[in-house]
Structure formats: C-alpha cells, structure tokens
Image (cartoon, rainbow, N blue to C red; front, top):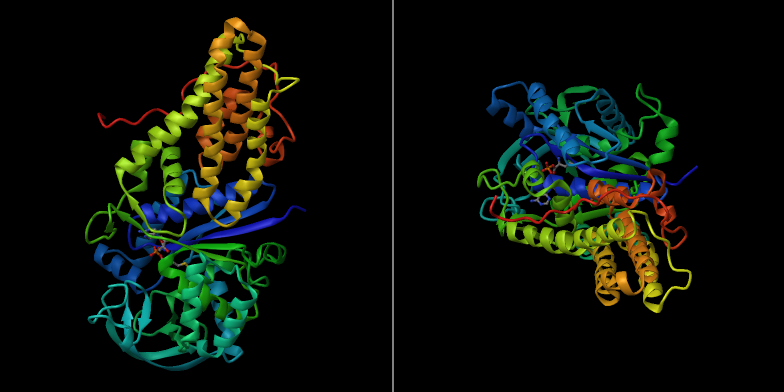
Length: 513
Ligand code: ME8
C-alpha cells in the first residue's frame, strides 16, 4: 500500500465571506496535496468550516437568521471557493455535522473521565472576535494583544488542566525539533510554554450555539476544543461511533501537517497537543504557521472594508496566475503585501515572458519547422544539451526538498532557474538560424527544449494545474505520463507524435482593461 499523507487547513469561521487570507492557506495545502499525490502518496486533504461559538452566533443575530440557517449559507461560500480556485480537497467538514458532534463529545468524555476536565468558575476577559480568554496582564490599553475588544466574563465553566502538561509539552518539542515551522515561531511557542500555562476554560454557559457538554446541558463546549477536534473527526474517529471507521483512522492519524496562519499557532502547537496527550491520541507530525497578507500594507479587516476577494482575483487576473503569485511572491512563513503591480509583474515576467514565451516559441518552431511532429533527442548530445537536461533532471529532488519544508517560493525559484537556463540556451543555440544551415541539429535542439519544458510543466502542476495541463497537452504528453515517476531522467518525452498548432498559455496582463 502506498504511503499516506494527511494535510489540513484551519476550519474557517463562518461569520464572514472568504477573503484572500483564507484562500492562501487552503491554496498552500492544495499545492502540497497535489504535489504529494503526484509523488506517489495516498493523500487526504481536509478543509472545512468552524460553525459554533459566540462570534458566529452574533453574526447570525445581526443577519436576522438562525445560527444554523446562517452557517448553512456562509459555509457554502467557502465550499464554492474550493471549486472556483480548483482546490482538490478530499473532504469538507462542517462542525455542525453529526459525525463531528460525536467526536467532540467523545473527546470530552475521555478527558472528563480521566480527570483532565473539572468544573469550576471562569472570571476574566474574553474576546469574541478571537474566541479566546485573556488575563488582565495580557491586555494592552484595555484590548486583547490582537487589538480585539474584550468583555468581562463570570460564569461557571469546566476547565482543562493545561498547566499539568507544561513539562510534557516541552519534552515533546525537544524530541520533535520539526514539530513547528518556521523555527522562529517554534521558539515563540517554546517560550510561551516555558513561561507557565494556566488551566483553560473549555466550556461556556452564557450562550447555546455549540456542542452540548455530555451530561451537563447548561454548558456548550469551548469553540476551540470543538474546532480542533475536526482533524480527528475526519479520520473516522471515534472508531466505535456511528460514523466510525477504524481502518481509515489507523491509516490517517496522526496528521502529517496542519497548515495555519500565525494568529492561531498557539491553539495548534500548545492546546491541541495537550488535548491529544490527555486523550491518549498520537500527536500530529508538524504544524506550519504562515504569515499574514496585508492589502498594500494595511491590515485586512471587515471594518476597513479592504478585504481582497479571491474570486475576483481569479476572474480578473486568471486562476493559475493568482495561484502562482501567492505561492511565489512571499517566502511561506513571512508576511506579504498584496498589490496589483506586484501581481502584474509576476504575470508578465515569470509567466508570460519566461515560461509562456519559452513554450510558445519552442512549440511554434516544432509546428512550423518539423512538420508538426515532435523531434527526437540527439544521439550524441552537446555539452549545452547535457547541461540543460541535467538541470531539469535534478529538479524533482530539489523541489521535493523545499516542498517538504513548505518553502513554496524556493521550490518555484528552482523551477524558474531551469526555465531561465532554457531561455539562455535558446538564445545561444539559436534554432531559427539552424533551420537553413543544419536542420537535423535544429530538431535536436528543439527536442532538448521540449523535454525540459515537459519536466518543468510536470513540476508546475501542483501550483498551476490547468496551465501546466495545457502545456503538457500541447507537447503530446499522455495523461498517465504526468506524475513524478516520469521525471529525473527516468523517462524522456516521446518523439514522433503529431502536435497541434500551439496557443499561448499565459497572456500578458495590461491595465487597459
Ligand atoms: O481562526 N493573511 O478561523 P478564521 C493570511 N476558526 N492568512 C489569513 C489572513 C490574512 N490576512 N486572514 C485569515 C479561525 N487568514 C478558526 C480556526 S482551526 C481548528 C479553527 C487565514 O476564519 C489563516 O490561515 O479566523 C488564519 O489562521 C485563518 O485564516 C483564520 O481563519
């Protein structure tokens, strides 16, 4: 059986429409999921919506509908976005589903029965926007450290004994140096835990929109305990429940990677591992926290009304162009500044000029000068031929290394180095000039280029599935010859097949509309 790879996005709150930030996280997971599938893994890629809690309840109230009707509607926006942006998720979980409520109640019962959850009283600050508890000392100018407003809460509450897990968490971090990426964020997590942990309030008694606490209807579960549990729900856990699936759970859990934004790293790298240890479940292998996109340097917020709609980006600039830009522009882990000029520059530079022109020029020459039949590679390649092909053959190993570190920008940079090399090779060997002087050599040169483009296009599939497919179609690469087993020199582009008249894949972007 092939190796499995289980990757998750955060589940998004349904208080608002999806924006570029949500699209970004899911896109990164989609690229990883596609990459791993092409690299021979049996992939489970999960995304979904986080539908309980006070924030969603309040948003429904403002909209004047019941929380369930509201979440049905907003969750659909997130589901629609996955189709629109060509996300290949294998499941879409909603926390209002029965399978999830069963998992939440199961984890609760385990924690309660093993004495890790006890009843007490919460007195302190709460931010509905963050769905998080804060101490007096954490507040800055009467607000949460995130800038969110807080309110005073005094109510009976169940507590999880988080403080008891400090040493075990630190030991786990020590033994698993890759647990959190990037490293700088892992250091922040460790300092936070070293600073001491307080027991965590895990139920609310002042509203109803949540999973009922088993055996105590006056409480609903804290939305973060509910939300985090989604990652095990989707594996068919609890295995003895109505939606249980022992085989699936054993195959998928623990997850290989939770991708999150830096805002919610603490929940994933501290609370979640503690809940899991307490419940006797294995811990995820890695959590990666990416940075924050701003709109030309301004924080994206509902109140500023400056959210960037990913649907709009795909419509105006092209889907694969948008996907490429988001993955290439900013080192994954860093904050990023969204701007249209930066996007236009990537579209016209990297895509239209570098890759688009290369492929269009080479295919057009084959179409015109080789009777539209794919030429054969040289029997005795020149030093230039060998060097170019070697750089393409080395790519998979390099790209895989970067992808396994979630360094998408580096992976793409490596691919584009080969594209630049191919463009320099075209200029140096000038196949158009060989047409009259040495047509055999011309066809060999074009074959070397076509083979390079084949490998580049296969590796570009996870980021730009449609555009890469168009290039591979134009090269005459069969549909079953597009996974990574045909890379690194193991296979070469077939010759002798007819090719159709090539069409440019990446149009230039101009402002003129
Ligand atoms: O936190 N830049 O949901 P959420 C980059 N329901 N990424 C951004 C972003 C931005 N400006 N804005 C949002 C929640 N994100 C919880 C999660 S998981 C068990 C529960 C992305 O709707 C980023 O991934 O507030 C961030 O972590 C997530 O959206 C927060 O989504």
